[in-house]
Image (cartoon, rainbow over all chains, first blue to last red; front, side, top):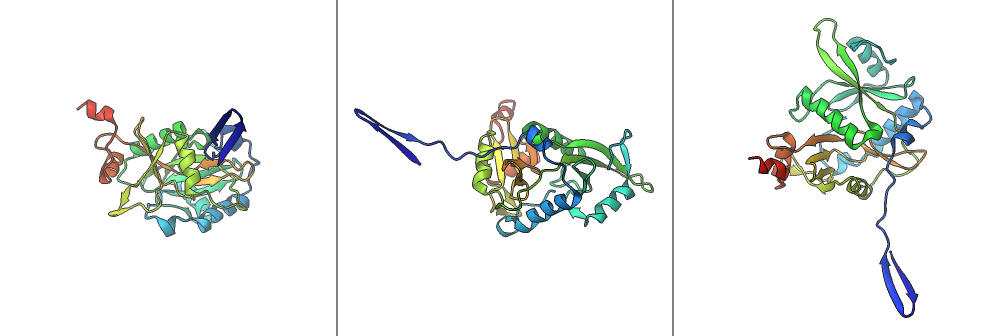
Length: 63
Length: 197
């Protein structure tokens, strides 16, 4: 996205920063509510069922 | 599984817990979740990529250095009561996955890894270039991270933050598996190794 500032006599184009992602921290992981076994396994099943690995890569599994 | 002061766990007990949750895992680990600790327990049953047990522990240390938020903890070893075979058991904190949002994209993983100094590279498996581009190289340290597909890089449910939970990390040094994999696609290992020749 380009943001154009126009304030004569200066005109400048500033390139917006690239999209960033938020990385998990030790605190955010340790502060999560404790998951039940059902919740944890639901998350595991979600990852397996939505994985693009089997469709696009022959990278070996290493879990 | 409550953490015990002694370093050995009965293999049969571990396998019972593993089977009770559907015998889940991958090419390396048998895995189960322990609700009392909020951690996943993983028993190494097969070293992949021709790695040794020493390589495996090096990977655990590399993981703690690169991704401390999901660092592994060595819990001990399972012991088979008959054969006396040992296998390491590690644990890792659970990361609650946002199941109402799409999986993490390749572009998001590229950005996440770029911020940690890693650049996307291609590796070759079974003579075919890895179609998923799931490998990343930190050229300054010679650290290779791969297997960063959307099962192993996840979006946390409460914060939307990205967490890398199960990468394959290895050092690319002369003669190592990582250096060989990089050489297959024309990428040399770090200059410090070359300088010492």
